[in-house]
Structure formats: C-alpha cells, structure tokens
Length: 568
Image (cartoon, rainbow, N blue to C red; front, side, top):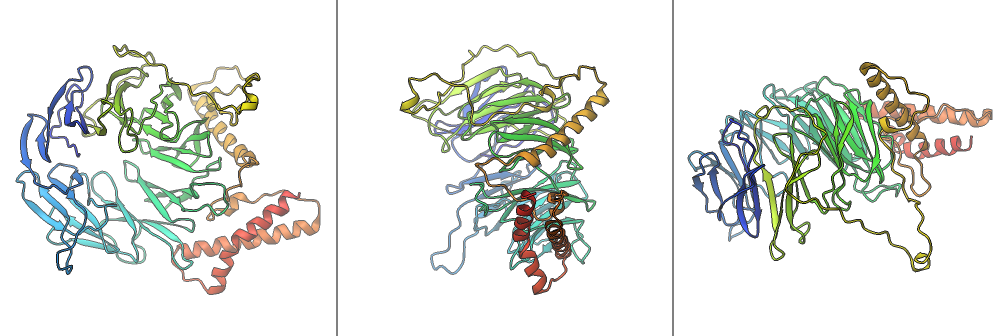
C-alpha cells in the first residue's frame, strides 16, 4: 500500500489508510474516525474527489511506491526468468500516473533497495546498477544522464531538499582496506578531489546513512554482524558524523552496548541517539557531537521527533512493554508517559499533534488493531480487529512540510470519549523457594533519571535561561565522561573504543614504576603511529604489507595497554 498527497491545501486532519484481511479502506482523522469504502484491487485513487484514476492488473506485485510529486508509480514483483532460461523478465515497472502508461521496465533481482530514489522536485532519479549509481533527469528513463562509478558500491542515499543535489555512497572494505562513506555533489563525480567528504572505518559489515533535512551532514551507523568481544548479541555498532564541509567525527557514546536508534531533528542542528545495554540511554547531541541533554536510562529502543521538531517521543517497542516518554525538547520537560503495549508500528500525524500506534501481522497475529493518541497521552480513537482477522498495515496521508502550522505545546491531557485502560503489569517470575518469602524491591538494573531531574543539593539558586542551557551542556559532558570511566559492569565484557579514535581511550595515569611507565609510553607511541597509518589509508594512500601488519596489531596493543594501566 502506498499513499500519496494530491492537494497542497490542508484538510482539518489527514486521512488514515488501513489494510488487512478485512480489505483496504480509509478512515477520517480526529475527531470523526468514520470509514470510507473498500478498494479491492491495485487502484490509484484521487483522495480529494474520491475518483478512480487508474487500475493496474498486477497480480504478482508486492511493492508499490509513488515518486515525491506523485507523477510516477513504481511497482516491483519477484524476479523470474523466461521459459528457456536465457533472459530475465523485467520486474520493476515505472508508470506515468497521469496516463497510466509504462514509462520503463528494469530488471531488479533483489527486493532490498528495489525502488529508485528521487529528488524532492523529481528532477533527479537514481538507482544502483552493478556497483554503479545511474542518474536519470526529469523522469526520462530511456538513458541515464550521469553515473557514479566506485568499485563495489553497496548502497547510496540521495540528499533531501532541492538543488544542489548530494549523494552519500557506501563501499565495504576488503582485503585489509577500510570501509568508507563518501559525499558527492551532483554531477561532480570525477577526479581525486571530487568528494565533498570522506569517512573510513574498519568495523563495518553494513551501514545506515541518515541525511539531515538541510542536507548539510550525514550520520552513519556502522555495524558488524558479530561482536568479537562477546559483549553483545547484536554485534558492534559505532556512530559517525560526516558534514559536507569535510568535517567528520566519531560520536562518543558513554554507555556500552547496541545503538538502537538515531534520528535527526527537523531543524538539522541536533540529533538524538538511543544506545547502551538495557536500560538504554538517550542523549541529544549538537553538530559538534557534544551532548546537549541526557534523558537518563530507561526501557527504550526508539526515538521519534514530531514533524515540527518540538516534541520527542522515546519508546520501548518490540520485546519491551511499549512505554513511551513524550518530551518538550525546547524546554526539556516531560509531557506524558503513555503505554502502547504490543505495538509494532508508530507514526506521527503530519499535524504534529496526533500519534498512531498499531499492532500488525505478521509481526504479531493476535490483538491486532490501532490507536490514535494525542501527545498528552489521551487515546482519541481505538479499533480492535476481530479475532479471526488480521491488520497488515496502517498509515497517515502524507503532506508537504509547512501545510500544518506548529502549535503551542500543552501539558494538560485532552478530553476523550475512549475509556482509559490500565496497562497490564506482568509479575516477575519467582522461583519456588522464594514464593513464600517477602518480596524485596531490588532491581537488576536501576534506571537513571534525566539530567534535569537529578538531585542537586545546595543548588537552589534560580538560573537564567542562558545559564540553565550552559549548565545542561556542562552536566551532559560531565555525565558522559563519568559513565565512560565507570560503565564497566562485571557481567559485560568492555566494548573497545572505535578504532579511528584511540587517542580518546589512552589514560594519562602513571604507576610510579619507571619500567611500567616506559612500557606504557612505548605502547602509546605505537598506537599513535597506527592511527597515522589509518588516516593515510583513509585518504586513499596504498599501504605496504608491514604497515598493514602494524594496523592488525592494534587490538593486541590496546589490550596490553589496558592490562598495564589496570595494574596501576
């Protein structure tokens, strides 16, 4: 199911499209929630006048996607070969929405990244073809206008917004060479200095690249499939920042463990990361990658900024119980703490006031349904699918930015006719030997409060708004440094620091034993030399075999240094 907007005029509230075993239908948004008719086939509907534009006979199609201005409909079906097995049958079709004609057909074997990427004005369209990125202009798909060729391009992401267009590309490492992400400005792809920025890293089996809205920077989550230290089931993750002006940095996360989610604010000036072993930490960082506000720890694995960027929801879905924290991020004030149990889907309404949560199949096949909330925690509408039916998908009607104006934040829960439900509290398992004994209040993991809710005795003086902001920055930096030193719990092996910044992990302490101090000094000297070699490799310099061998010894050197310093 794909939903596009056809009108720039804002309705009273966006429509909601629901797809499941009961059919495909539309629901009016708050406050009415009345249903529309059911659409039984792959149809293109004009939601403004409810008129049928086109109907396509595509019984095998499993993916649909509109271009940003809704002039092209892309469809994908599983790849098959002809009867004589000599040639594959094109399975990616691009249709002109206005006329219904097929503009172009391509062979796209993999479902992953099947859909071409368009710029917001549809002047540019790109797709990955045999380790090259082909660029088409003005929806002319008969021939590509430009191509970006790098050996073994694995993925790319076009920047949001209008010209000048930019593209981030990822090339995985091989044979001792590092993986890297490069930023380019279209169509300047040729020459050794064509890239706007380059960031390389060794620990990366896959990456996720996230442009900010203004297309000035990219956040890269680099992941390995296996954590060689054995500390995490999820592998290892590091977070990198790359700006189009050439600046780059490793984002220092003070709590060990997985990176669950990273999201940009729509202002493009800050981002929020949710990370660390449970209870997970959440922190807002600025463009210098300095912590701005620390939300403490809690049962969370996702973050969602509102369309206007003034509200942030921290949530724990999946194997967590669905707790949500709704924050005013201009004043860092908690608005509400609703609970959406068993939710598999979350989405902000384009109006910035309402939230959609849903439980969908096949992730969960029981208790399917959806709820519409006000951000103050009130459930305004609830629909439970019958026990013999399933809900597959539900989504808001999208709208262009600026259609719905930002409204002042309210902290008082809005009224609702939907009866409130008390969340089910699961009792902790108690072994038979303890069931007749008093219950203690001990917890396996204590949750840490946000930085502005931590007790600060003796600091009762009222601060100005600027002083309070500076104090929050100072507290966040201090907390990050303290956790980086102390967050080494006995049941978790320590996660080594990202290899590109070993200088931040080297202790400056001395033992009092000249022999040990000398060994520590020599180890630091070797690690510094390795860092310089890695920087040379990142710029494209070909390293000698003995230099590559030195780089491979870094982990052992770090371990030796840590052992010496722990004995101090």
